[in-house]
Image 1 (cartoon, protein in one colour):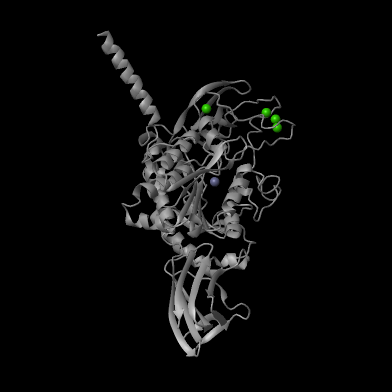
Image 2: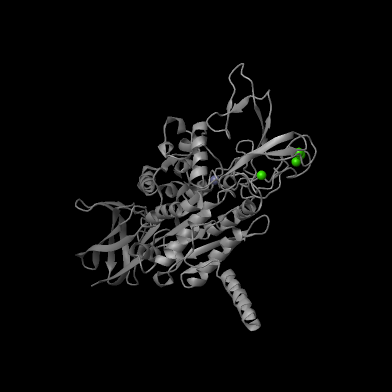
Length: 580
Ligand SMILES: [Ca+2]
Ligand SMILES: [Ca+2]
Ligand SMILES: [Ca+2]
Ligand SMILES: [Ca+2]
Ligand SMILES: [Zn+2]
C-alpha cells in the first residue's frame, strides 16, 4: 500500500514536470495570450520543431535589458533569404497592444505547420523570406502582463521622463488600490457633482441637466499621490512612444509628443532599424497595433510627397483585399483616415527600407457589442475612438452575457486617503482593445491571412530572350522580356523617387562579345528603343506588377552570352545563350 502511494506520488510529480515542460507545444494554441516569457518560449518551440526552416536570433535589447527576438522563416533549399522577397511582420510596439504579438506567432505557426500540406502556403514559403518580430516593445509587454494597468497604459518605451518636472522620474504611477489587477476609475457620491446614475445601467453615469441635482463626481484613474506633491498619478512610465522615434520624418516633442530626445533613442528601435537595413530584400511590411480595425498605408503627414500612382495601385490591391479578409476593417491613408504622425515606423519602412508598408489596427470594439447592431459603423462612429453611453451599455451587456463578467470590474466601495469614501470600478485591463480569448483565434487567423495574401503578391519574375536575330556578320539583335506575374513592383516608385538605391540591373555579358548598344524597347513593332549611352551592357530597370518590360541589345562577337537580372527585392535570374 505504502509503495503504491509513493509510486502514485512519483507519477504525479513526473506528470506535473512533463506538463510544465510541455506547456508550450507546436502547433501553438491561440485560446489565450502569451506573456513576454511565453512568447519567447513559443518562438523557441517553433525554432526547435523546424530547425531547417527557422532562424531565431537576438535583434537587440530593450531599455530594461529584455531581448527582442526575430524569427526568420526561410526554405534554404529554394535559396538564401536575401535572394528572395522579404516579408517583415511585427507587433506590439505599443506595450499594451498585445494581440499584435499573437498575430505574428500565429502567422509563423501557420506557415510552418502547413508547409508541404497546403499548396498556397508551400508556394509562399518557398518563394519568400519571412522576418517576424512578434514583440517590439518587450518591456511594455512584460509590464502590461505583470503590472496592474488600464487597457491603454504601458504603451511607451522604458526611458524615464520627469513628466511634471519636479526633479523625480516616474515617481507617481496609478495604483491598484483594490488589488484586482486592473487600474480602473474612481468616483465619489457628491450632491454637487455634475453626473448622475444612468437609469438604463447603474454602472454608467450621464451628465445632469441644468438645475438638476448631481449625484457623482469622477476622480480620475485609480491611484494615490505617491510623492505627496498634491497631484495624483502625474508621472508614470516614459514617455517615449516607440512609434514616433524612427529616423524618417521625425519631429521633436514640441511638434510630435512622445518622439524622444532624438530619433532612434529607443535602444530596441535602433536595433530593429539596423537589423532591417541589413535586409534590403524586405519589400512588404506589416506592423500590427490594436485599435480601430484598419489597414493604414502612408504617408503619415500631408506635407510628405504624395505616393506614386504605381505604388498606390499595389496598396489598393492589397488593402481592398485585406478589407474583405477581415470584415469591418477599413483600408485608409494614415494622415487623412486617422491622424498625422511624425517619426512613424512605416515612414521609415516606406522611405528608408523601400517596402510597401501597412499598419494593421487589430480589433474594433464594435465586434464585442451585445446585439451587434453597432457593428455597422454609423455616422456617430466616424471617429474611431468615439465613445457613447449607448455603446457602453451594449459593451456591458456583452460583458455580462457573453463573457460572464470577465471584462468589467463592478463599482465597489473603497476608503481613499485623500478622497475618503469612494467607489472603484470600470473596464478591466484585458478589455476594450483586446478581444476576449474566445475571439482571438478568429482575429489572428484573419489578420495573418491578410499577410499571407500580400506574400502571394510579392514580385515573381521571368526572364525570357524572345528574339535573337543575326543582322550582320557577327552582329546580333537580342531582345529580352522581364515579366512580373504578381501585383508588387520589383522596386517601389517611392524608392526610385527617393533615390534609395540603384534600380534593378539587367546585364548582358560574355567573354568574346561586346554590347554595342542597348536600351529599353518601348515598341517592338516600330523598333523604338530608349538607348542608354554609357555602358549599354547594364540597364537599370523596374518591372511593375502584373506587367512586363522589354530590352534590346546589339551585340557583336560570338560565343556564350549571359543575361542576368538582379533586384534587391525580387531576387535574381539569369539565362545563357550562344551566338553562332
Ligand atoms: Ca516627476
Ligand atoms: Ca484596481
Ligand atoms: Ca503625486
Ligand atoms: Ca510628482
Ligand atoms: Zn499602437
